[in-house]
Image 1 (cartoon, rainbow, N blue to C red):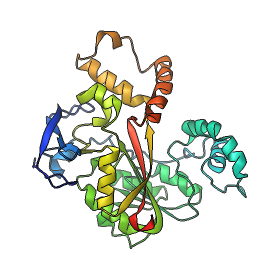
Image 2 (image 1 turned 180 degrees about the horizontal axis):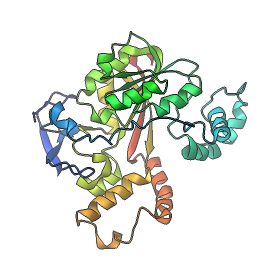
Image 3 (image 1 turned 90 degrees about the vertical axis):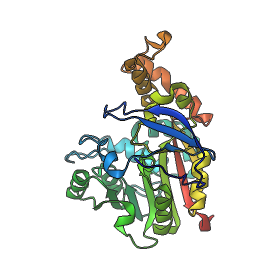
Image 4 (image 1 turned 90 degrees about the horizontal axis):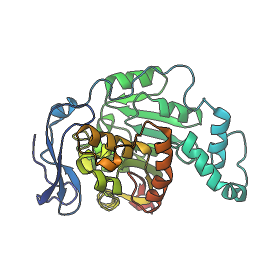
Length: 332
């Protein structure tokens, strides 16, 4: 364990928000989640790299063999419809008129949640990099949509599986891959950035490898969410100690700006898992209030009851997960 200075402001001024342990896998250890005076939240003292590896069991990363149909190929006709009409992919010819797509946008949005909620808008045929790509399943689907794909994955088994499936994947960290300047049209990090002990270095590297008009998508837990305030140390996305940093829209925007990237768009997501797994953590630790004990996240009734509430929470900017769309500062 070692004490660090805040990577956002360089300060050593911090207060302890919560003390937590590994509730997901039960690996022993207690950690302090602290908030710097600038607002950035992170574990401090932090585990060393070797210590952190103990908290990633073999089944943590997706490295199952890919065979048969990809997720894109299942229900292909519906997914092609959503990709064409909602994400602007020119599959099967010219795009439908814009007025028609705008007219159907509420319906298309609902369809996208059920079929392709991890898809990205079409930016024209180009290079797509997924950092923390796991077994390459998502990249393989994007490959079928016309992208030239590249993965980066630190887990050897997962990287090996991705390469065997035809998804070129570098095994190691993003800086170690040493991609040429301005290599990619799109860079994506979904549920990866909060694990990284060197966030400023990674943002600088993304800025270097993005093309001048390139776009980066980073999705992380939102420590400013209302569900964090409800659950505190039992909040599922807290995931101590694997999530070493936690961001609010404000702290992430400032960190990105300091490292050459500008936040163009912010979107919120509140999947049922954030609420119901947190609930089960509280139940298991004997901290669940009596009035919540009848709630069971395994039942469709309760999960469906959550969805409209989650939608309202997202509209209020209080969602569990936040996705940032970033561009180069120079491209603004």
